[in-house]
Amino acid sequence: MTKIIALETSGPVGSVALGGEVETRSRVFERGQRHARDLMPALEELMKEVGWSPEELDAVIVDVGPGSYTGVRVAVAAARTLAFAVNATLIGVDSLSVLAQALGGDRPLCVVLDARRGHAYWDVFVPDEHGTMSPQHGPGLAKPEQIVSQLPERCRLIGSGLAVYGDVLRERGFELIESEETATPDAAVLLALGESAYENGARPALHDAQPIYLRPSEAEILWEQRHGKS
Image 1 (cartoon, rainbow, N blue to C red):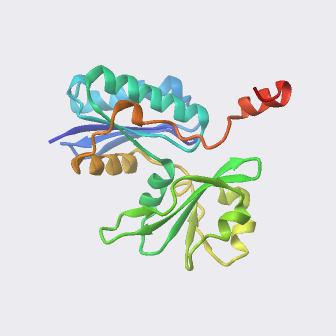
Image 2: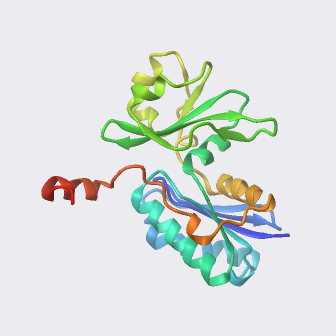
């Protein structure tokens, strides 16, 4: 049996989870906790509960975004450092897939995350014969009007972008599912996706787990506005 952990800090509420040879356990941060400060202490506490040491880990699963620039950087950096130190496999999973798998269902699903400046991160997922929500495009960045034009019939929509662009998305009659649970990725679901990939033989190189940004950060945009593109 394997020992696997998952680090999730791409959204406003972070979480960590572990599983494999034990029943999945997770710890969700309180809203407002700082990912950089609280991530590793939360993980250490969770591992202590089951008597695991870092050297025993087989795989580290991390959400590579898109999402919060700071949150994604924190989790990926921590996951890389830990995986390298203990020679564990590092597997990156995108946040849209985590949210899609959490809801599941037998109809197409579009995950829409607010990317600000009139844009959203998005992808469409379709359930396969095993119940896995399979991405159709890969994480993208687009205006809500562009997203709507590419959605299949009877598509459901979830994610933080609905709170911002719901009126535009609702005009076409698609079903919008708005809740905290469908807007914030959860480490337990991330763990399940990563564990499945690991059990199916995924052994990516350490550097393969790269943050998915899709656009410059707010700081980079501000710098370019002040100084011009290099």
